[in-house]
Image 1 (tube, helix red, strand yellow):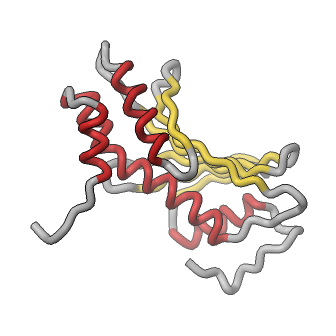
Image 2: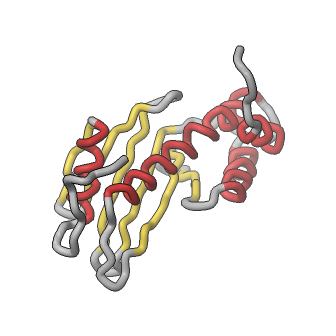
Image 3: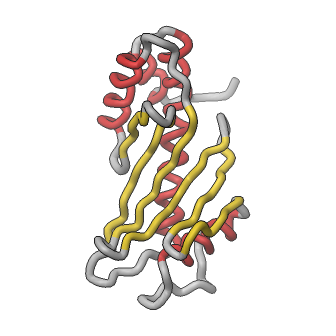
Length: 166
């Protein structure tokens, strides 16, 4: 993704850049506040809710992708084991289970200290990494929670590369 017509400078707010990225992709979004934008991104498996928020206090652009999840009773231990396995395989971001809210989350923070500026390609990469992780591990989640498959076996299925055509 290139944005040759959009030059990021120190006086452009990071959420303005995120809004530009959302517009470029024609994603539904709502500018919740000056420092926050909410997006809906259609994936292969489901629609993901994604929030990007700017914290001037610690100069961090935070991304949070969430989706509802209803693990069957007694499967929380397997869910936690699966999430630990996923986090071991992620190079950026982390996944967590928010039990009270019944949400699975993917979180990432882009630190921009020293008046650094987020460019559209960075924000696009953050979003693509979040959605990519959710898409890649969704089948493993389904296998563990609803198929009774062991987390380790489900992770093997999620990380296996497909070759050829069906």
